Image (cartoon, rainbow, N blue to C red; front, side):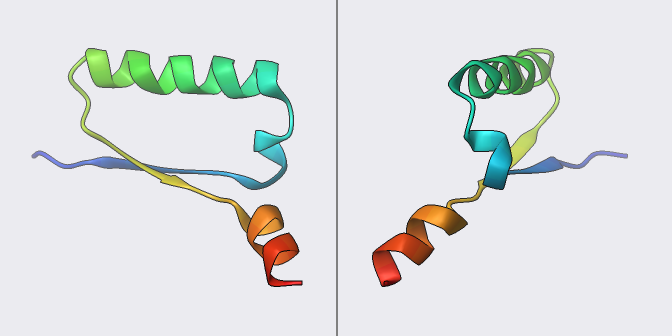
Length: 52
């Protein structure tokens, strides 16, 4: 069986730059290990602010 792991990353998880680096490093490690990754990023706060 093959497939892709889809990770949705956004919202308040993007507020702390240190955590962003840690999480992206973990995701990169999975990809380097041969796991196909689909990364869906959020941006709801920024988009909402622009819409106002």
